[in-house]
Image 1 (cartoon, rainbow, N blue to C red):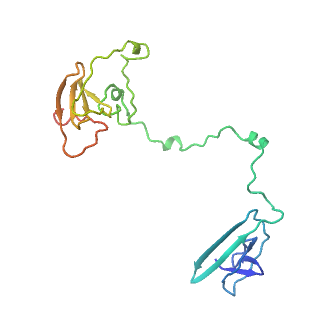
Image 2: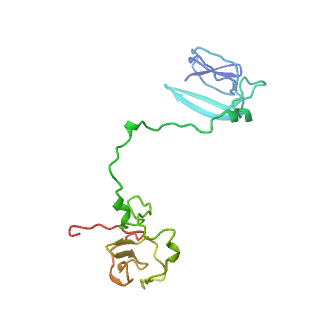
Image 3: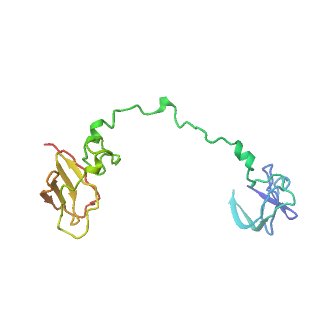
Length: 211
């Protein structure tokens, strides 16, 4: 974009538009450009220095000062008054997609998904929701501790959500083992020490070929 100057007012050339209300202390521009002017209407002030190369021409504008005129045509920073705010709608519905654009229902999740707890936090979405009804708001006050399990391989606690598969609870231990505990009695059935440094924030069950 070529630039020029007339007196102390810097204007854009060859675009049919001017950058109003500016002064430049030093500038370089093509001498044969056509000048265009418009009135100054910027209601703010700033100082800047920049360099703009284009089409093999380098434009320098040093210590550019954008000034505020005595009277601005429009106050762009004004906030609407209380009456204008009162006329605004409380909410506006903007549809994100038409019904025909939505993905058809595929039957997931199925009800049995929420009857099992075969991965940390219950399901693939980590919703922590269970459809079981034996424990509810009426029976929760009757709960009591059935058993307590101690891994006995470190002093800190378990930082995960155990999973339950066919009456067996699986959980990582503070000592970085995976243990299988009888969910009815709390008796440890077996433990396994993974190789390397696996994450122990949760477990996922996969039945395997023989499952």
